[in-house]
Length: 259
Image (cartoon, rainbow, N blue to C red; front, side, top):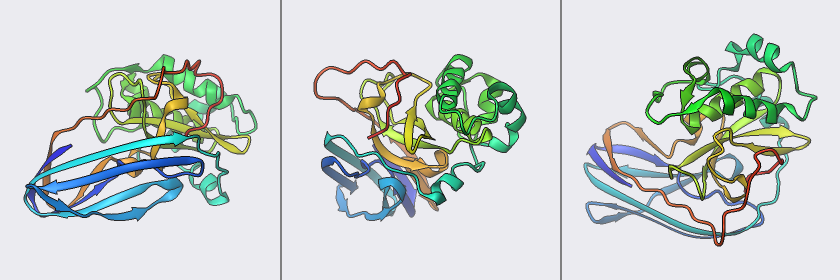
């Protein structure tokens, strides 16, 4: 990505693959401001999330990240704190505003392992993928009312509806080979039978090839670029993710956990 930094800025990048047991990662991250190499400070978050922090003065920042990932991540059990946190409403997944609607549509389903798949299928039918129709501050309620959105909007609505019926749910930013249009992708995860299961109501890419970048309550936690102070403009960005060999088939029904 190329970023015009107009004034001194503290930038936070979340583009690096999340390290997990079972994965071998070979990677390289370079950050150049007007041709001068900058060394970011790395901050570690939950579920392998890594944030790279840069102090940047005015100029043109070019960021390049490359990674090769081999293996399959071992599944993780949610902690008691996570399961409590991911049942609560959040900024873009306002489950408290959807309690009555979700209960009428799906019942109160914490004991029903089939609820997450039904919610994801419902959102996939109800919402149309249309780029440019949602605003960065739109949440799950706006998505439900408008009937359109992009991947983050689909995921917010799935997460909000699941939390509204008592199922712990969270969002994840991923690299998604096969995704069209290719970009950073967002999916939902629901905690079912002792493990996190990946839900992608957009059906844009096979879930088994997705690679985790960041995990959180909603888009506020998984943003690929954030600016604290200063002024910036994102001039250009290119994302490419490929799998070795053919893309696998995904029926979007079989339970799959994210790498």
